[in-house]
Image 1 (cartoon, rainbow, N blue to C red):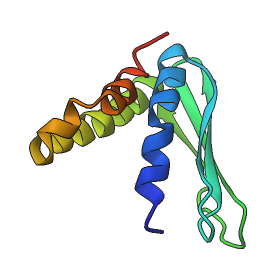
Image 2: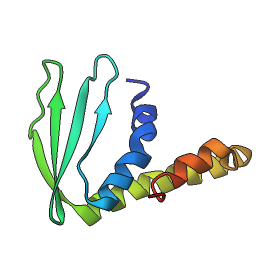
Image 3: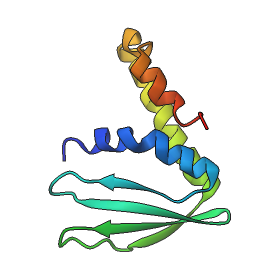
Image 4: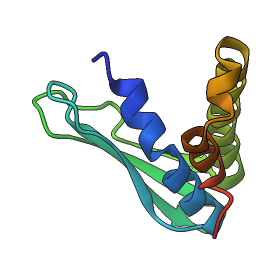
Length: 109
């Protein structure tokens, strides 16, 4: 469970880019013991978020709907908070090429 955030952050730019484009996407929490993913399927201005468990645990509810703009805002908010935290804690790291590429991947088309 200690790597959930890192697993999410590695996928965040691509998920954000897909949502901005109105495309289907997923977040895969593949860590052993968690083993579930959230699939996002677009339907106009709404995304259907389906949680799929690969363990005995079952989500309740397994499906929720979220507005595309709301979902994009949530994802961008996470990215912005992480960048701000890096800037506050390790300003030199915030300037590193890896961080710049991570934060700008969602903007690139």
